[in-house]
Image (cartoon, rainbow, N blue to C red; front, side, top):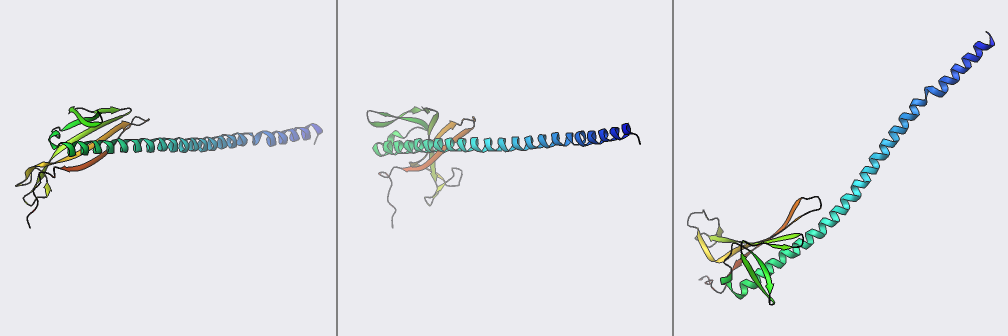
Length: 180
């Protein structure tokens, strides 16, 4: 064999060693970058999700306090004058250190929250238990009302959220005691 032939074989062997595995390194680099990108995206999603959840928890607490304030305002008005509970939907306001209804159909806008105070009639059956209005022998209990206070807001992701509290209000000064 001549020297130039041996030299060419060595060059070909060196070429195969160098360039045959070159594509493999590129694939390894792409796979490593894809894994890193996936891990980074997962970590970012986890962090942002926990921040969003923390923010949502604070908003829920605020909304719950506003709903409870609405319940307490209505209870104060009821204790002062049952005859003021004539609305089906109203807002409340504190005027001259006294809670008052704003008027039929009104809502309150409290920053990013909206509060609705809703009243519903209460029906009873012949035994005095609360029932639906379509139950046979159901009658309207004029001395009771169902109260629902609903506080709504939109989250940062523009989803609608709400907290609702309900309570049965009764005019105890007009309720006749049960006979033994």
